[in-house]
Length: 476
Image 1 (tube, rainbow, N blue to C red):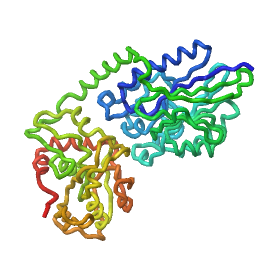
Image 2 (image 1 turned 45 degrees about the vertical axis):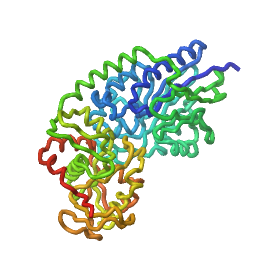
Image 3 (image 1 turned 90 degrees about the vertical axis):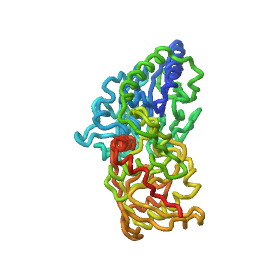
Image 4 (image 1 turned 135 degrees about the horizontal axis):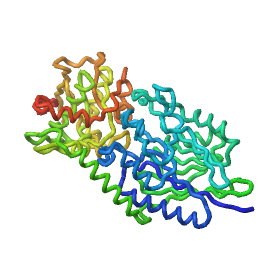
């Protein structure tokens, strides 16, 4: 028996952590050179969420910087993550990969206008790697809100099952590039027979040496480019049978930084700065944000969301805004730093009694100081609940759940059984932070704009700036 090896070098969920990219490139090049010197084979892939608009380099270049760096690094295949598919407007996303020198794979994201995959994207790709025929398949997480952006997102399990059924007899190795999360990766391994390897993403799990589930090897490299994955397939060159599959995750900063990537990042940073640096408005005085009490900047955002979605009232947590704004010019770069979250405004219809209970819960110290991770939130804590369209009389000395004395909605007492429209953040609709939001009668999402786009509009309104100092929460 004559054996050889295929090394798959893989990254996932880098989220525009550009400072890691020179080390990733250095690692890919070093491992590739060492493996090829032994006569072994190497393929490089990224599993999606490479781009993240919280970073000014990505925001200022509409992700072109990410593509340039991926090209220079030497990736051969890439998946589509939800940060690419959901946070970029459709017209931008459709041209996002125009300059890519790698093949983009995603089988379950369909353009609702053409009923076809986006241009330049393939559902799978069969590659000859030495004596092996390898099928690369990819799917992305099936968020329902894709339809609001003009996409149809297909069920990942059935989509992959159909492809594997069609290609399994034609290839020696099936590799799934999965941006659906570890739980669904387990489902793939259990329900879809014929997948040899799942390179995972989305849930930021670090599986340092991988795991075996049924007959499938699963590995994921954590988040933010902290690790570079190396999955090694040893195979018989004559029979093309798989002898073993092993994985490891290398700390990226254990590799030398690639100087050309350092310089390329610096170039892209300068280009992005030119786009984001012009002033959008000038503030005549400071606008404060507090995470523990009512403040003008939080009120301004709440009013902006209410106006944006056309609701009766609005609620937004102060922790969404990361710092106060000082007197002077405000740029798009300032707004990005102030409000970096890929979070969209939405409108919820819910009964008054649930609204009251949510507001009571928001008044608790546990809620105000609660640390939030995930759901698109890039801040630290929940913070004070900023509101608009209503005024509340409350007493924090009273027992939790009984602190609100009265609520006026547009100068009328809150009616417990009446349905109210609330402008708020899409992260609340999942019910993880305030479970009573699951009682909503209706939810309307407003995409693709982020809440920083709402704030940009409000900061340019002299009247809105003046109204932001009006007290909504009245302590008695």
